[in-house]
Image 1 (tube, rainbow, N blue to C red):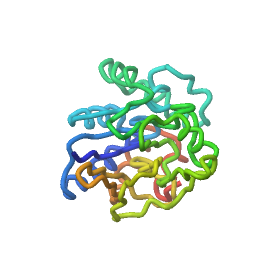
Image 2: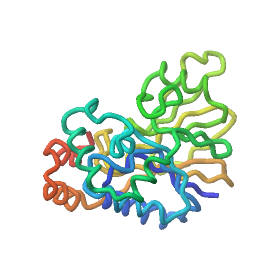
Image 3: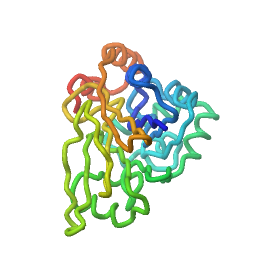
Image 4: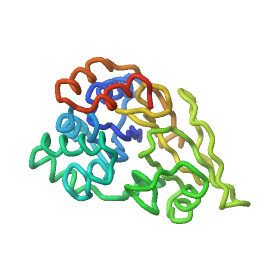
Length: 246
């Protein structure tokens, strides 16, 4: 089984299509594991929802997914994100709204737990330090957990002798990472709005036969996405940041 792991598509159809095409070229996939925030920020929320639903799909909720359908208050977001969330809510139809409302906070797939933010706070907490990682490891009932939300790829390994201080390491690009006996938290990076100062979408593929995972990046037509955002009068800050991966 090959699982295509995507997070934070953020209504960026051009980025999503580039990832899907690249993943197909690398051997294809049997299922998509989507870690939340299919919508928000970008110009094509409805199209991105419909596109991933064409495949075998396991998806969990993100904070922008919930904001788009009124399950959380977008006024808690920064000004640009709030504007985009309110705009997004007007772009999705009833079937797409029902889909976003139906998404679970957490999904367990064999050895993997899927969640957007963390197991302590599934759509709110950014898992970026040892404290937040230790909190999720303490709640994990599976060997591995895949998360999104921060848009920053990483590997985080539990240290059996010191469980309060898990080790963060780089998630290398185009290198197979064997998943051994150690428990891990894995972030594949962001598809639609990378924030690790690399504008290219980032994603991962898990191969169950090899019990290994690989991360890849692709280029896409950023200008086309930005032109759509300008036509929709989305905030300039959101448009410009795509060039810089921030």
